[in-house]
Length: 327
Picture (cartoon, rainbow, N blue to C red):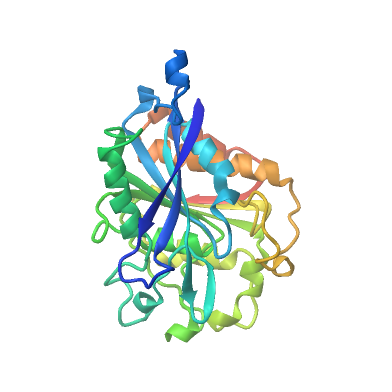
């Protein structure tokens, strides 16, 4: 399926200029025009074959440019999804201007957490999607009651914390790579705390056995030494009860923190904190996209054949999958 994209911008209420603007790239299934006149139009029309399209909103990791996740967005758009990538440069961390997925640290405090959303960017993105449903190339083709939140690293934390129908009833599922629900000591949490998640929608947690950021980021969580997979595994075990058979944990063998990233920008992220991947990154990304796509097809689009494919993919021996669980 042909994939095309266009750009948009959204304002975030309550944020001081010039840090109040999010820049979006929206990828969608397109059809190649037939006539010469149609071919002269700058933006190709959407392919209505699989409309209305569920929408994936992807939250990047800190200082990871949205373009670095385009490989995944293209794979998902080829399956008939609309995917929103975005860049937001803001003062999200104290005293630091960075690319941010939009974490509201005030709402992360123990006395507030789970009573309000922790996603600063999400409300503005949802407003923009409603505008796109009313005008432009995707008008009338979006399924705004089937929105999937996905993310990497801190963006992954945002995606799984805010897949909560109490705050965002249009969200249908969430997925993440290289993230956990650990509570920061500076927020007032006891060392090693795993924060509860909404636990009301399908959830896919993925991690890698070579995730150096998990190993080397233990101190902010009050833990002296870290492990590449323990925070993700504990999140699956402790943050959700499950019981619906639609929550998954997948640990990828040989994958590091940036296996989901196409070309990390090592001028702004610290490569020495990560471990070297021991499997080809291209193979790992291909597997990730297949797992994510089948997860969405199974639990958002409710395709029976996808459910069987996902089950087979996760249960048949695969050198790239160390372990998988479901509850």
